[in-house]
Length: 570
Image 1: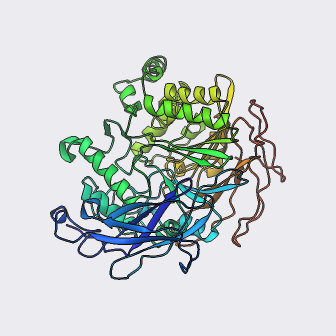
Image 2: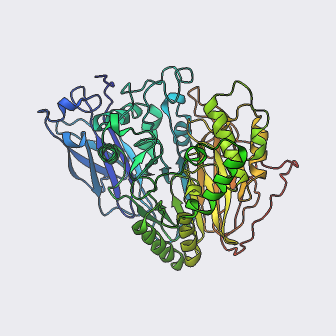
Image 3: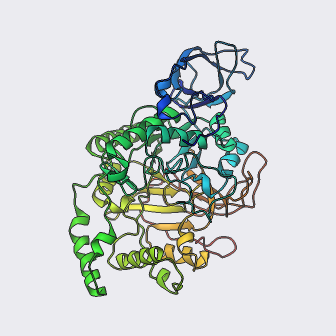
């Protein structure tokens, strides 16, 4: 069995209202990373440690304490609550073993209570170690001016070496363990251990509390409640077993509670709703390949798409959240809006905004374009002509489920912001339902995973962006080529998303290129605004983006205004 090198003792944490949730993992050459199934019941002794939150880094003022035990059955990972802390305050913490050795010192912050003037979050998605270095994590850690980090999923990828990325695309020095697709509990644990060896990821966890939710690759590509595109039961066993293993490893290694979904109250400013859109209730994704199978003429293919659009596509029973989570969310939106909080924020995985393939993308397809890419682009363009979306794995593939969320937001009079990942590109959408303004969506680009530009490399990026924005009514802006993260800031008056970008993460560096900024939210409109310099000494030239006034009740979609230099942000 291939073994990953052991990693050092680390401490990780996430947030709660007036306490903090901490996690310690211990891995040694005889336990933890690289351990095979035959060692699951070994006689390695449990590890007990004292946890110690403090107000000062020298731990001269200890705020709470206690002990916690790491056991083999949880891969030497353990969770502990520290109670009675002050809200809205930074704390330092560490763990001390019985022999007196200490973990690294971590930093965390409790959520605020009452009046809150600002809350700033670093938002990440889609971090594939084989495609490059985690410069987005490094930059957020160097910036330092965040109240917490959000990870919207695809924290790692399940593939073995040479799949995604291919051997030609893989970056030197980014070694993957185990050296095959992960399927078993031991596999998933080892993949987490491999990623946690990255110093930039460790530093991010060390400095900030994190709210995290899985997407598909934490289990398998395009996963749903009853299976996944990248799961073959005949060779990989029962999906339910693999799904349970993925979920167990995630809850062991990630700074999360065991609840599938949760709400986080940010003082009187906002409520964050961490949603689960993958494994609990999601119906299987529609497939254009199946819809078009056997159609030998364009006319037959279009007829099949139209029949699908008017039939199965509108099936009201198809779920993404499920009835229980939907009812929880609807109630939470009402309570938050009724309490007068300016923002209701969905911390979730896949795009809610409507997105179709622009016809221009099919022009000039090169002869040497790989067949699977050619088929995907042509099928997407034909679906677009039938008024069907590009991505059936997003909320676009579940229109009835999306309508239920939008209706709940409208009924609650919520100021809705959707944060989404998954696509590897950056987006800004105005969301509406039946002519009523619902909210806005900020979609974050991948940390390393390549986006649309890798499929449509035959088109200049500016053409790809311009044609896509022009062809999609809800879409107001996109970035089609760069990797990075979002800095999302909430105030009582506005919500902003600052896009921290690099063209390619092939070198380790914390400094990104000058990013655009997008701000907006809820039923307020998206308007251009000048951006501010990034804190922490990393200043960039002023750019423009979106801004919204939380007090505005305007529901009409607002057209783009020119930037100061006369260009349009496309």
